[in-house]
Length: 66
Image (cartoon, rainbow, N blue to C red; front, side, top):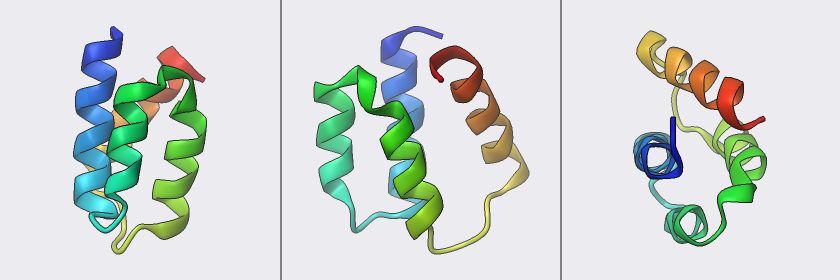
């Protein structure tokens, strides 16, 4: 997974689980080192439980970037 794929997947997760936090999308595009912070924000503020496909996506992101 490269940084472009990461940005797309992280944006998808933010838009799906915490759409009110559009500031995180800006952060994703500006700072690739903020992955851990953004994942923590998604987990802390999500408005629904994760879907199975999103859990797999989170595992993939964690494998490559944490």
